[in-house]
Image 1 (cartoon, rainbow, N blue to C red):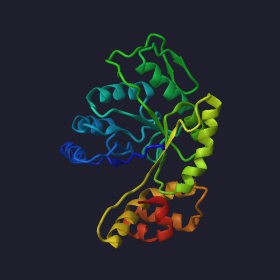
Image 2: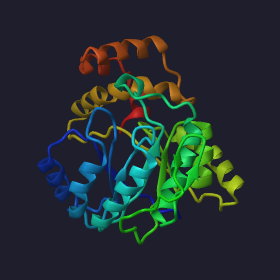
Image 3: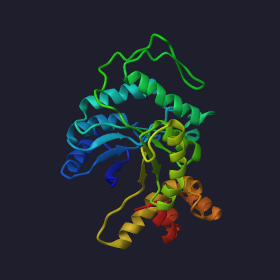
Length: 285
């Protein structure tokens, strides 16, 4: 039977002292992993992870997920190697196309699937100590380039964050895990699994080699209504983006448009109040 794992994820909007305090708190419990996001304009993932990792004795740590169209693969490899040096519980690397890029002045990728493929290949080359000479369609590195830093001794699992068919197939070929970020919907995991399995088949990998991860806003409170109100408020930030990506759920486009407008106006409470119970249960825990 496949072992289930439970991880925690944190937004990177905290002070250095708060990151450390959270890591010490998490370390008291048997969580399998700790992730942080890499959403602009919050702190990029690696600073918070480097602060937290030394205090997490059992949980593996990593970003969920970094866009190689924001942080170049050569820098992702270097940051991952440094993180592995201070993380006793192990490290993983999450990669994703990235959302909200254009509104933060970041150019939208013209070939996102190819870019993720090349990022994985470059990271593997750098972390294996090979010369990273690479001429791709998206990323290129000179023949003489080689990692000048200590290399990780353990395999660094690759997680690909996606809701899409093509990237799920690519992950089936090259990754260790696929994360559906912002989903609590079992049907979505079943839907993407067939594309992941196709990627495994293309690469000659054992069926089921690639694990599936789901993650979404999670609220715990003894008062159910307080918990659901808080979950609505938080889910309103990303639901307008991800709701349209789930083909197993029907969402009223007008409701999504109204919610998006309220979020842009800073009224997350009103935006969350628009989310019906049945929809909330698909996008939050």
